[in-house]
Structures are given as C-alpha cells and as structure tokens.
Image (tube, rainbow, N blue to C red):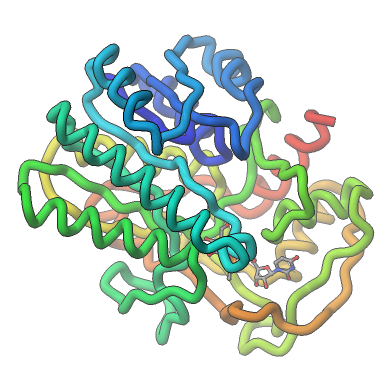
Length: 332
Ligand code: UD1
C-alpha cells in the first residue's frame, strides 16, 4: 500500500512517516519546509533504515500534486500540511485561510481526479471551543475561537460534504489533543526556532537556558492546582493513531471523527514538576495572568477511538517529558 503524506517533515508528519515505514507501508512524502528542516528526510531514513520517495513542494500547487499522483499509484493520503500557530493566525487570518483551505481543496480535487478517495485529516481538539463538559466526546458541539481553529472546522465540514456527495470516500478526521515528546532516538522532534507558543517547547527552552523563565498563564482555574489542564499525548502514540485510522479507511468507506488523546489531563505545574524530576533539571517559572482565549481544562473521552480504531496510548507523561528533552539535547 502506498500512502501520500503531506507535511511529511513536520513534527507529527515525520513521526507518522516513521511508524508507517515500520508497519511496511510505502510512503511518498511532500513538504515545502516552511516549518521543518530538509535534514528530517534523512533522519527518518536513519531511524527506520528504509527509503521513501520525497517531493519538495507546496500542496496548494496543482501541478506538483498532479505530478505526484501521475508518478505514484497512491492508495490513501494522510494530510498534515498546514499552518498551525494560533497567535499568528489571529494576526494573519488571510494567510491561514488561503494556505490551509486552498491546500486541502487542491489535494481533494486532485485525489478525486485520480480516483483516490481515502484520506485521514489532521484536525485538532481546538474545534470543541470551550467544552461544556469533560471528558470531551466526538459528538460535542463544535466552535472555534481563532482563525487557525476555524480552518480546521471548515475543512471538517468540506470533508463531510464531500462524503455526502459521494459515499465511496473513506475519511477519518483526527482531532489531536496536545502532542508532546519525540522519537526515542532523539533524531526527530519539535524545536521551534522562534519563541514557542506551546507549553512543552517553552519548558524545554527554559530548561536548556535558552529562555529565562516560563510564564504560567493563570493559577485560578477550577483545576487541581489552579493551572490549566490538558491531555498531553506522546507524538509516537499519536503517529500510531494514524496507522490505526489508515487501517480503517483502507478497509471501509465512511466519514467519521476520532479523538486522539490519552483521556488523562495534567496541569501546567504537574508537567513542569514531572519534567524537572525525570530530567533532573530546574525549570524557572512564574505565575502570570490568564492567556486570552484559554480554557481551564481539556481532555478526551477516548472510548470511541478505542472502539472504532482499536487505538490505545502506551506512553506516559514521564516518557513524554524525557523524550522531549532528549531530542533538544541531542540536536544541540
Ligand atoms: C494550543 C492551541 C490549540 C492548538 C494547540 C496545538 C490555543 C488557545 N490553543 O492548545 O488550538 O491546536 O495549541 O498544539 O492557543 N501555557 C503556559 N505557559 C506557556 C504556554 C502555555 O502556562 O508559555 C499553558 C496554557 O495556558 C495551557 C497549557 O499550558 O493551559 C497548554 O498550552 P499550549 O501548549 O499552548 O496548548 P493549548 O492551549 O491547549
């Protein structure tokens, strides 16, 4: 089976390519390196000791996609490529709508023309907005608070409409909770060049003395210690969730959404303390005001993904903290 992976050198894309190759799928990757490095292609080959075909290009480019589908007999697609920084999406909404939605439309049109109708799409738990209850189930109401989230929600709608129009499609919408961690080899992982927006990359840079101090955004939420609670999932578990989703879409038609999380929430301070303990390193922090748009707690009901995909996570919070730091130490 030959799987096209868009955004193949990104954080989640690269870990998924590794797990696909480990599971003996043929992989064709595409990325424009707008938020990843060329060397990731070789790192993936080094980890898996397997080869895969790679195209440098942008998924908005119909010509590039036609070339890929003409040159390779693709069976299914996993679509990661897209911009993902919440703050940037607020200041540059047109850039986010243009890139994320255009690329998806171009991809879906090209797939349709080549009669490839199986796709797994990277969505996000951000589509649940401010959930009224916890844990979050897939049938909860959907809403968003920023343009990035809206691109995910709009694309989910496009995929559902597409399936309604043509029941021969197989579509899995994967709603990620908070991916952290890195491959145990330390060869691939997440290490943004700019000041990170997300918690774990920020913790890592403070531990590494690249940044002075972590700002903890609020300690007055209705949570175990007042700080925000999230469902952190090891990126390798998340990657394996894609393998499970792929098995499903290769087998049967349909269009369905699945939560990919662990079902267990940890607070900011729990994560900071676990990180310090397992890595034996100090993480300076101070409590500051809440970040606008943040919610107090967010964690998944994982029973639907278990029931329908057979997906279960295996890696705990300590492993996530250890692997996140190991990657950054190794890549220095
Ligand atoms: C964020 C996005 C979400 C996106 C996800 C991608 C928002 C509102 N949500 O989720 O749409 O899909 O990233 O990974 O931006 N925190 C601090 N200090 C920091 C950074 C974060 O205390 O410097 C806290 C936050 O308040 C939150 C927790 O850490 O309680 C996790 O934050 P973050 O890693 O940014 O993820 P989310 O906000 O859950």
